[in-house]
Amino acid sequence: MELKTIMDDIAKDIEAATKVLFETMIMLELKFTDVSLTTGSFFKSEVASFVSFMGKYHGLVGVFCTRKFATQIASGMLMSEFSEFTTDIVDAIGEVSNMIAGNVKTKITASYGEMMLSIPMVIVAGEPVNSVVTSNLPISCFTKDPWLVTNFTSGTESFVIGLLLKETK
Image 1 (cartoon, rainbow, N blue to C red):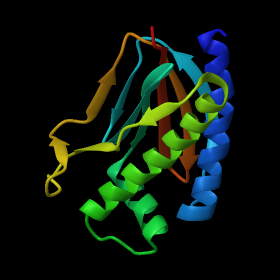
Image 2: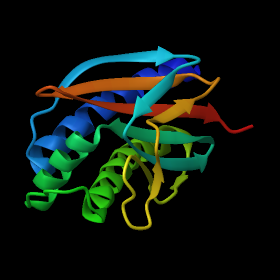
Image 3: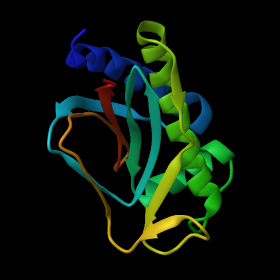
Image 4: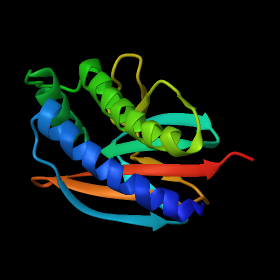
């Protein structure tokens, strides 16, 4: 099956799973805006969380958002208000990317064989947060391979899920 067709199917699952996750576990209204398959793209973000997967297909699921929106996500998910950016927020974003990657894994596994997931890796731009990897600059993610980019908004904040998918040779 052509990679674009697989990604189109997965895009629908990413949209549905993300909306359900936000409505039921995070208590934030999330609006799907669009999805695209892009090449040579990059993301600039303050917070990025990645989960890799491998099997017949391999790749990354990336969650990209601002520190402000990451704080809102963690507040809803952990039912607690945060006045500063903490490791609890980092852990919550990692768990969001893990749940979305788990959904992608389920979709791919059902049709294309068993997959294995990595643990989430979260990178935060700005002030250091304990032992979390930080950067002074916004996080940029470049690739020559196509990304499936699913865009969402919540109020004035944007939230992006990127999927990099390749068939293992």
